[in-house]
Image 1 (cartoon, rainbow, N blue to C red):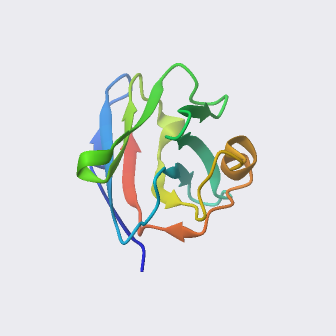
Image 2 (spheres, rainbow, N blue to C red):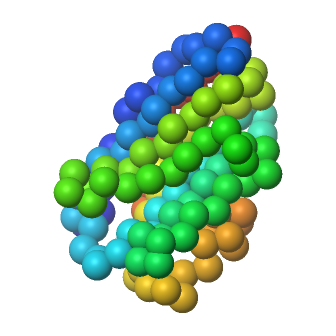
Image 3 (tube, one colour):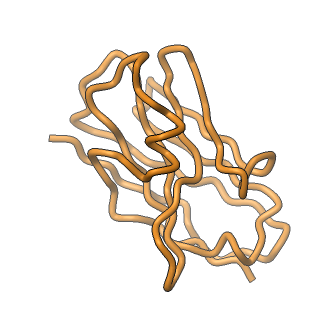
Amino acid sequence: HVQLVESGGGSVQAGGSLRLSCVASGYTSSSYCMGWLRQAPGKEREGVAGIYTGAPRTYYADSVKGRVTISVDRAKNTLYLQMNSLKPEDTAMYYCAADLPCSSLWPIKTATDDVDFTYWGQGTQVTVS
């Protein structure tokens, strides 16, 4: 039973930074296929970043490229999203997500862009003003 618990959201001024964390439990795999997604009020959920630790490979949506970094601490079973130079349009509920099975065949771009993940956390709110 996979559980994902996010934390680290909050309110920040434009130009500021936040680091989101997601602790994964029950995730049994030699590699991680995970991502961060977000949903702003009145908008559809969208992919932000994805990571496959087996290669490793990362993928970022154009809207955040150069401003965010996704990473995994395998010892802590924790996924991170470091966000810098935050903009008001980054305001959204941010979700951690995981996909199983995880292998080198995992379509990181498609999974992230299409918001196609198997397991989801409850979300953490990010507000940029």
